Structure formats: structure tokens, C-alpha cells
Image (tube, rainbow over all chains, first blue to last red; front, side, top):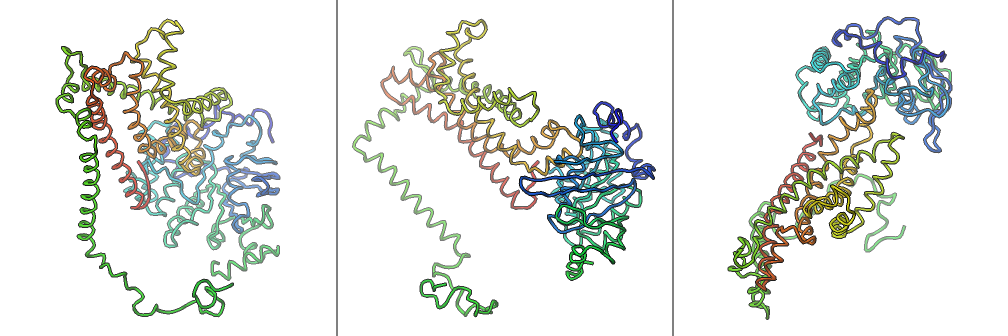
Length: 285
Length: 314
């Protein structure tokens, strides 16, 4: 897995060169991901993570192929968010390995900043930078991390905004935007880094119900464009609709996985059955 | 559960229905002091009377005190106040007004240096790079020491200690420079803590968002955390600068800097009255009150912005 030399892409000096190239970022909207069919994008091997005495992840194994859309479902506290935060190294794992495109990113000597610039993450609470305009939110990463010249980054940012119907908001500050608009900007901010993988952490949970669909719409577009995505979500019908595979997490382990039709209609595990019954009873599926 | 006071049965006892319907008629009657709509004039009248009575009382205390005449003579002698303000070389009087310009100079120079040094210290304490460990320790010790030692002792220490060292370039400076150095050393420790509070007030999720874009710890601090932190701490910073403005007077203890307080001291020992001090006090108020009002306005603006929703700062 970790042959010498292979980790070099995350080793600092030359990292980033593979994705940024010289092409303006605007183009990337139409080729969200290069064709990587057959490659493995993410693999987790026996990942453990505790916060103090609380064991949040208790041995997670999963593999995501390029262009695959994975939905993580499960009750609050089952470890979905922690799993995503571990993948982009916001939380260091206690045990196990995380392998991105064949490179072990939990090995020592890995430049975490170099890893993160290839992974987009979107949070439940948007986390836009309140002191920057929408456009500046989007260009901060490209200009400061990828060293894209400011005018190019802005041009690309404007292209992304217009693509997702937010052109007229580019000079507004985040507090002038609705929750749905803020979350769409947060997605665009992640996309502007041309990530190879997108991690979406319950991105619609903080939204008013009428604003959910505009955000889900973007995610659908990304899926269609071939973006590899790991999505933690409570939107069951959306998960059923968009996922290639669904993983059911319970108390830090994956209890069930498979194509959505199988997991949602014929769950094998009794905990999964229980969980889905409660969802159906609440009228959410 | 036993009944409290005169209440029949327990509060929310299981027999009571949860929905109790409309409150009985007359439940909303006030205490007979009139409605809020008429309160504006009433409140204005009450506050006017209360103010007049209070100020009248204080003035009466000064006017009718047994030593009132003597106090007026020593502290509020208009002729001598004017002399002290303008200065009079023929009588060996220094100008308190001119002295104040020195205070303002010291304040402005110290302020710029403090803003810079304190930020450096606060940032040092925030970075977790292992190479910086000794500097981080130094920053902690520095803030602990200089927040704990009274400013006047720091002024003595620098003003009398630095010349005694006989180091070229350091021991030959003027008291003006030593005074500013002492102010900077002491205030940077306080202001560094103000900055640090501001940095800690920026939510962790902002850092997570910045780091997840691939920004290094330093760049997240520089572009995301610090701009938000500095905006939050502007009012408390201004507060510290109000006290810095008047603490410049302590530099007078070194003797050779004839700033407002020192000028007043010399004048009073020449004229044998304290009116020169009154002049100095009034002049310091002229400096600090505008800054205090400005700070209040910033805070009020901040509050109304928070109430307006969003709470964003920029």
C-alpha cells in the first residue's frame, strides 16, 4: 500500500501540482472529476477513534471507488461525522489506516495540508467566513493554498457562482444570505479547490425545510458529474435516490451496507430494521 | 410534594390538565402607575427631578463644607489655573498644556508599539509548532510577570536600571524613551491577553473550515481567525488605551520628562496651591472622555448588529 515514493504526492513539495495544472478552474465545472473508473478513492482499514473514554469509531472498514456516491446513515452519535472528519485528517485516528488513492495518509511524515487540499468537506453549520464576501470565501483557498493568481481565482469563482445561480450574491457577506444560499456557497468554496473527493456532513440538517431541495439539487449535479462523495445524511429518500451504496453506522461500527434498495427495503440487521422503522414512523421515508 | 405557601395542592400535580384555558378576566391589570404609552413624559420628569436633587446635593456638600473656601482657593483658583496652563518662565512655571503634548506623544508611540508587540505575543502563544516552544514559554512567563508587577515599579526598573547597566545604546537613552519602554512592556502583557481572548472567541468551526481548505495553522490564523478576533476586541482594546493615556503621567516619576503631571507638580510647589493639578486633571479628561464615548458607540453598534441577526462582524 505504502510503497516508497507513492506518498510523495502528499509529501509537501510537489503536492497540488497534479490537480491544479494551468487550466482555469472555471473549466472544472464541466469535468468535475477526471475519469478514474476502476480506481479506489478511499479505503479505511480498522479505523478507531475515541474522545477520552468515549469510543466513537470502533473499527471501521470501508472502501469507496472513484465516482462512487456513498451515503452514511445512522442515528445521531453513531460516528458518521467523526468518520468524515477523520478522512480529511481534522481528527487524528487512534488506530487503523486511511488510504486515499492508494496512499496512506495516516502514515508519519504526511503533510496534512497537502492531503486536505484534495478533499472538500462541507459542514452542517456552513462555517462560511463571516468577515469575507461570498467571492472572497470562495477564492481564499485557491489563492492562498493553490497560489492561483487572484484574477484567475475570481473569474473561476464567478463562473462557479453563476453555474449554481448565485451570481448576484458574490459581493454580499454571508449574513445576508439564506441558509440554503450559505450552504451552496460552502459547497462552491469546497469545489473551488478542485477536490478529488467531497465529504458532506449532514449538509441539510440546519436548513429550513423549504431550503433543503436547493442544496440537494447541487449534490445531485455533482453526483451526475462523477464526483466521488461520502455523504452523512438524515435525508433518507435522498440517500435512497442518490447513493450507489448505503452504509448503516451504529455505535461506531458499520452494521450493514449495500445498494440502497437492499438496505432500505430488505435490511438484514435487526438494528437497521429498528432504525428504518423509526424513520418510517416519523414520516421521513 | 408539599404545597408551597398558600397554593392549593402541588404545582403541576398530575390531576391538573396541562391545558388550562384562558386566564381569568383582569389577570393583566397593572400596578396602577399608568400605561407604558404615557411613560415617556413621566419617566423624563422623574429623571429630571432625581438628577437635580442629586447634583444639588453634591454641589451643596462642596459649597457648605467647613473648608469649602480653602478648597476653592487651593484647587480652583482661576488666576493660578491659567498661569499653570500657559506656563510662566519668569516665575519658573512650566506649562501644563505643553506638558500634555508630551503625554500625547508618549501615548501615540507606545500605542503603536503595544498593538504590535501584544499581537506577536498572543500569536506566539497560539501556534503549536514545536520549534517555537521556548518562545511560547517566554510569552507565558512574560505576560505573567508584567501583568503582576505594578507599572510604577516597571518604570523605576527601566528608568533607573537601564542607565546603571552601562550598555552602549541602551543606557544612554532619555527618560522619555525609558518611560515609553516601560509602558510598552507593561501594557503589552495586558493587551496580549485581550487579543488572546479575542482569538479564543472565534469558534473552532471556523478553524476547521479554514484547515479543511488546506490552509496551514499560520494561514488560518492570519486570514480567518485574527481578522475576526481583532474586530471583537476593539472595544476592550480602546478601554486599555484610555488607561494608557492617563498612565503616561506615571513617567513623570523619572523626573526629567516634563509632561503634564510633572509640570503641575513643579507649578504647585512654586505657587503653593494645587490648582495646577486641577488643570492637569481636566486636560486628561479632555483626552480620555472622547475616547470613552467613542468606545461606547462602537459597543452599541456591535450590540445592535448582533440584535439585527447574523452577528457578523467585518
